[in-house]
Length: 81
Image (tube, rainbow, N blue to C red; front, side):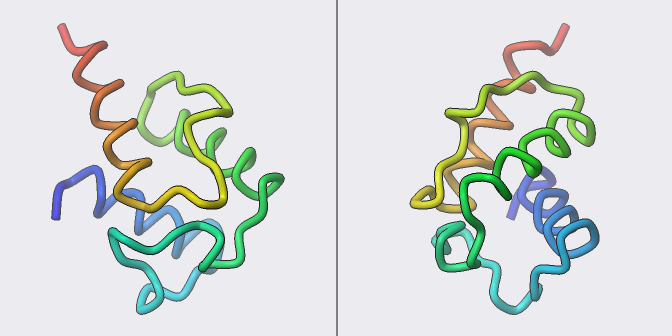
C-alpha cells in the first residue's frame, strides 16, 4: 500500500489499540467498532500526524480506510509546495 495507508494503520494500532489484523483498505470504521465520537478524535490525531487540515466530514463510520487515505493524500498533495 501507500506510505499514507501504512502510517494511518500505525496510528490506528499504536494510538487506538486497533488489531492490525482487522485493518484493511476495504474495512469500514464501523467494522472496527469506531463510532463518530471516536472518529472525531482520530481526525484530530490525523491532522497532527500528517500535518494536514481535514474537516469532521472527512470520515464517517461507514467510510473505509482507503477512503480516508485518499482524503489525506489529496490534502497532502494540495498543500505541497
